Image (tube, rainbow, N blue to C red; front, side, top):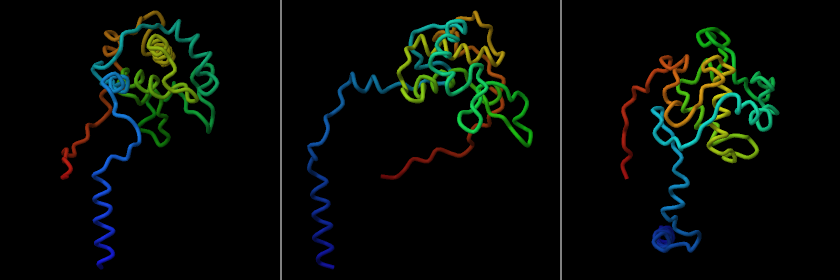
Length: 175
């Protein structure tokens, strides 16, 4: 028991000393990591794009995985279009058009995670354009509508009212 107490005390003492690994993040680095985009559009950066421009970016950087027209690659990468009205069936098809509740979430996901091999490599204009293309192939917006930080949050997604908010209470952890 005495050995355990000594080891425990040593571990506690070691936690008080900095490890010397890494550097403190400065304000500029923290701002670069603050990329959260909310459903109401808060957090969207300046930029713009249309489906016409997005078709070119999509063909170059997205079609290899998601197919030329957003149909996906069977058992590899999901379809981006289709599935309208399928969510309540035995075989729901969760796509951007059938499932996603907010267009800003589509933008955020493309910005954070695409293209798969090089996430966060697209410019804001490219993300707006690809988002416009994906929304257009789902019949949600016309190909000439310019998406930007003001217009994107106004896009009404087909499943906007299909999500049920989490009714569980927020419980703060005790530390």
